[in-house]
Length: 363
Image (cartoon, rainbow, N blue to C red):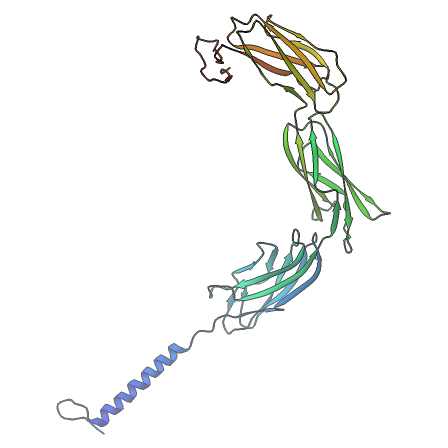
């Protein structure tokens, strides 16, 4: 046995043996570190799914198998699609041991996606920064219904008017779920659906009845079945409601320097029928009125005569017109008086309103 050299130094033989032991030890350590842990691997079967021709109103249910092909357990932490939510998911078991598999249920919602569809469905595990496996879904989305009579845009109507509109829904080949009712999200707008068995089509009759407020209204009619989970066909409706009548001008500005003045009001009813004035109420004895004989036209003329306004200031008052039709609200026309410079004078506290060009005082 080599006991080394005097003074504690190793002999060449001992030194060589020591170096060999260190090298073997380092190789063993490095070798153990170099054996990477098996990363979980998921496999989707099938990797591609072609749904073929799909009606745009019917959700499609499909199932695929997710299999763990690695030697390590795998946990499914996320399933997502590339279409912003057009595919719903349900995983029966999100934890898979090596060699185990589970079923991933898919529900494809094709509504609003007419034409070719290509969607990626990806499954992710926590061991990777990005999804592991993807399933390519393809389909040809075709309309289940062809509609005639769209868009539904009622012409300008008055609050007292009722109008009807009819839409024809033509089912395409493969559509079998019958429509039975129409739901509306706007009061005073309703619909009714009937099936023409002889022609194989649906008629949707839409009614906008009296009572809508002045302004633009948007409604959504949902043609559906008695089943709460049944198919839905949506019909957008647009209605523009104008005032029942219009008085022009909507206000009067007078010059108090004139001894006598004549102003004419024109009253028009939106329905096109002649408007009947029941009475005219004037705020001051210096105002007289006359209603010329009606000529049968849709608008009514009212002549207003003003005298003795030299001492008037600011707001003289309101001319109020009432009508024979009780559904027509009275019209109120304010009357103002301005001085020689075109400046309206406040009637309270003697302060002047200096806004030129017929500016009105605050009421």
